[in-house]
Image (cartoon, rainbow over all chains, first blue to last red):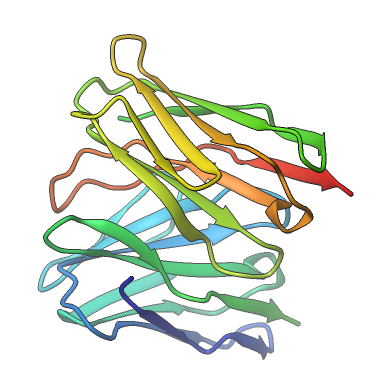
Length: 115
Length: 113
């Protein structure tokens, strides 16, 4: 299947700092990428849909100024957690749809811990 | 929007037995139904998928069935093995480029040796 690369795999930061997470489709062009948040033993909660060249679509309850998404090219989407706080600690995972069959493939995830 | 329900939330089976996980969806326009397996601390992996023009699909010990009329689909794992232990997620998707992908709440499967 297609490969989606996500970096970093884990990050520890101080409260108040910003953290950027990158998601790349390595062998295909992804017009749409999705960002999910996952708490332990829970499902994947969709945060936003990232479309190349346009603004991201955020799910209800997700602060767009807190979680900045940039999909600058067909192979790269970034999620920046601004002014991170301990409650932002979670597993963040991106995914991309591979055309033409639109199958969904996941990055390896980023475990964020905010101290 | 799409709403996906999944049952059971937890499932324990003896090694060698079969496991069945069921999902229901609300959007009748959904036409693509993937199943993902997520092991602890790892990314979800696509294990099988089915499109609405097919009623059943099988890949070795794994099969998926779809009932479009009733809007439900099921994952069947036969001859379960300890390495099948994981959380399984279903999704129901419209295959257009910009539709968001919503997952069911997941089923934690434990296969007891």
